[in-house]
Image (cartoon, rainbow, N blue to C red; front, side, top):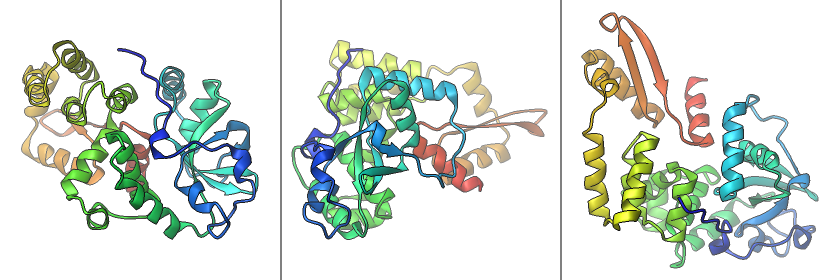
Length: 295
């Protein structure tokens, strides 16, 4: 796969230097609108973790894997910071922050929040989403910010931006793509429709196989979907076991998947009297969502 680095967020506005915003601390200060509507490049040394962060354990292997991805592709999804004088406190993205430090980065792209900037941020994001020059990943990131930082539901968001809820859902699904595939969508190497076809496959090796086939044979989205279906129909013994689950476990598997909004796999033996549950997550946000349901 080609290494297609792209400066994150340039489509959302010019990246500003930290020196230009020292005096901006609240939404009422001059220049606040430009600050909250752009992605900033913030020095790692000026950032500190939230001391009240409930998550204290970070898997070392996963962190190293993310660090390697960042070395190769850069930070795909900016972190979110709260401005604290000349420093910045992490609101979300501590895992990306830690992995960026491991990767040797001296700065990281970030969204900035200010005191009392809720209404200002919402207006800036809704205005931004109406632009015609955004790529699919930038649109998805903006939708995700409106959900995470403004607290909108997908239904509220649909009304606010004048888009069908299914359209918003399809954009948000793209954020579950492997970062390298996200970069390919952003660069135009594949389309958002190709990305969703790739997402229909759960196995990463099959996803890569489909991606390579799309590039090599210049598949249309429809052809990519048909190819994905063919790959899914090549059932493995493991998949057959899942299909043979007792009905009550199939129902439990579906209910858990619907509740947690992630792929759930139940493996059982002894006629369904014992087994294990496997929860798949593809991002820090999905993991936090699972943990929130378990608390």
